[in-house]
Image 1 (cartoon, each protein chain N blue to C red):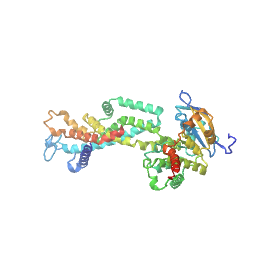
Image 2: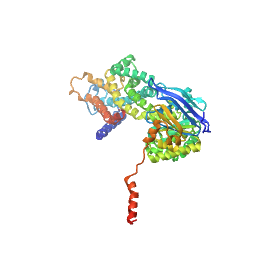
Image 3: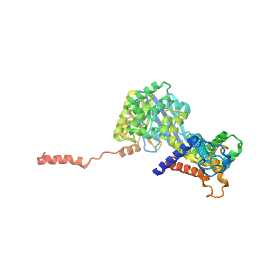
Image 4: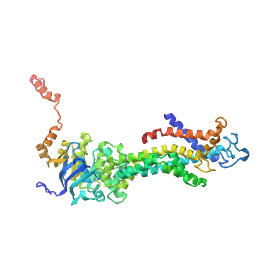
Length: 286
Length: 269
């Protein structure tokens, strides 16, 4: 299913609900479509069900506690009907995940090389040299050094930005069709955040990998997403091209989100500068 | 505290060193009988005197130390392995596995440990060779001493199971067994080391308890437990103070271990 404006084929088409035990559904009749090579933003406040949505797509929901109903069509397969073995063969290879906190998402007890090697070996059976080559290519792809010295590091010996790049390198090792970035830039400072966003854009352009960019930060969504879906209390209340949604929000919740966006106030110094200049001009001192 | 740990380390090194040099320090060996000097007081030839059948007590203390200090870490290793197998895996698998494993662990924990050891040891033949008795004692201690460590490991593994890095590894397509082996187990190491070291003094005391009751290491092999049996018939404390050397050694070694383990216990907690 594709919308009229889109010419690319659909990669993922989901329509499902999720509930934990006998509680009210966490996600209700969520409809989401991602086209091949598209960057889709999913925006919502904490507790709106963003991460549950990501985990449902990846089949990582605790099946004993959570119950998902509906369909998640991905490359002609319904992910909700697949068993653990089939899902595992897709995870990391076709579907990849980058989590919010880079330092806690990397195993503190393992060197970077080991973590990347394990991720590679999960879906490849090549020699050590092949593995090493793939690892180095992935690291270079995210602008990280691929030296032995770097690969010997533990996560605690890296900056947050480097750790996030390692996670992204791990996620793109097998060139997945869809990368789910769950609040992947929320824990970063603004400069590192901008770098990571640029990296996502670049990877999307180079590899044609679709990205589901989950965030509560509208500014970063506006930066990289082609389309945006607004998730509120477990429902997608609005979905469309990013520019359209952000410039002309229809739903009340989206309007509130837009209104809550921080704006940089004009400082007194900045305001007084033109006044001071004109005063100086008037007195002839400039 | 640091000075205490250094002193404990020095004491343990001296004790271990002396026990390893037993063949040189006490060339007569632990089994040779000096029948003409049975139950003799300390002398130049027998520094700690002889026991009631004339064996050199100093040699027996050294060899007994060697056996007890070898047995306790071996039992600690076995119990730590069992604790990982039961507690670590149960915590990682969660759900019904964790509930069943912890129910079994609680059952073991609620049993009086010493009586359990005595019962299990008593079920086995008493007329076993000394070497077999060492193995049996080590197996019993190791097989019954895993419970507290299993509880700690279960809780730690359960926390790791829901950690971000395990979620990330699962999202990379890494399968369950490898996830446990590569991602969970290395993070259990600090707790494992702590549990291993904490178990050693416990097993030293347990072996001594079994030895006092005649259920530990069989004669003529000495161990701290069997050496302590000598104190059973002692009439006065001041009469033959040299007979207290194994007891003093036991207290000193266990106390030294406690000093050394103060850091490890913090990790385990």
